[in-house]
Image: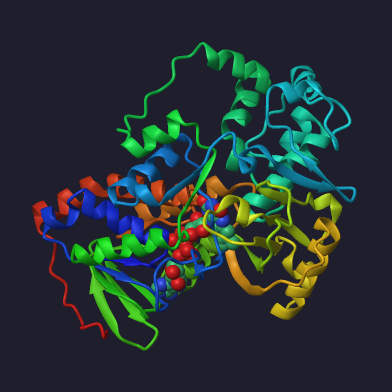
Length: 492
Ligand SMILES: Cc1cc2nc3c(=O)[nH]c(=O)nc-3n(C[C@H](O)[C@H](O)[C@H](O)COP(=O)(O)OP(=O)(O)OC[C@H]3O[C@@H](n4cnc5c(N)ncnc54)[C@H](O)[C@@H]3O)c2cc1C
């Protein structure tokens, strides 16, 4: 028997790939998914009415790259192709991404042509940033913050107005702390190996591209042909984990909600005791942990304090979410994806997504204001209420977007420790964790957003990669025979 801990997208995708690789049928293996709360999906949560859709967690998915195409393959396989709502290159949400600097909203340059023009708030055309890179000497480093790297290669303005708000938008983090390898691993390697980004780019143009062997579904091909920018799921993103849940349940995975695990005890290389918070224990042969690293740290600390310490070193930030619906006939916003506020502006908000522009089937104007992240405690203290966050959000959108109307409906949530921060040294830390697991023969595999990428695509690809890496292990187990575990009945 194997167990997946956590029913977020990481845990659900792990179940999907275990089924797709016939791990259960070939090894006569039973699979349990143990989720602490009363529903699966983790941070993905949609509130849907006939007038509006509020996304409390993620809302858009990128279709590009190996991980993006892989997610589209999964969506088609789950029968969700018809639910996908693409944002194509000519859509305002693809063209207009804004930043708020010096009390003004500016459109970020998005075309090659715009690189040759001066675009506020940048003081010079962006082409000068490329000259800066060519002139700058390389520096030999193991890792660096993404802010330092961009400032060194492309100048302070690109770091402040380009990368710092982007990091706020992706992980609500501080670019001065986040590892350059989080978003710009290849560019950093070009600097280290070829002396600069442009020099590395030139050399890479003449290198043949490596084939990733991914067979593309029709949906993935369509996304490539039509050059989708991002996409959402009609009716809300929660449809995705709900469909995955049903897929697992239909394929005889035992889905156990309200099962919070409080301790993991490794008995030997093929046996793990799991303790539930009500004291019940049961034994399985292998565990897939898709829990946040700090939760896993607590579960293993009694037996493996060294592993627990390294896991705890992965920091997480808290984000405040304020969803707003305005029932009006006229749109209250200029069509765009939304805007981000660079940290140097020292604002109380991270940014605002214009949901009614990105997500179809909404009447009126729908906005989501994001607050806090890396700066949550310093801006709002320890005990801020949802009412205070709502008031701040309303004040900010009134001042920035000139919206005088009162919202018809609101939703406020404080998402405690919801996004892991891949700070400098993250990748080495994760390697250390995996090495510890391997050297100590612990029958546990790590998936979920704490390790190999924080976005939806990363989490799904990480589950796929992990399951594929484990296939030889399961084969070996089935040759020697998976030791049947004594299953303590798990209360429904
Ligand atoms: C506000 C916000 C906006 C985002 N926007 C985007 C976006 O637009 N695009 C994008 O690609 N990504 C986005 N993301 C990231 C995306 O949501 C995550 O990558 C993904 O949801 C992580 O899934 P996960 O399974 O790794 O973790 P989680 O969703 O955290 O799931 C972990 C699960 O484990 C359960 N659990 C915890 N402790 C225990 C225990 N002791 N025992 C059993 N179960 C336990 C939890 O209840 C939870 O269900 C966003 C994230 C947030 C928070």
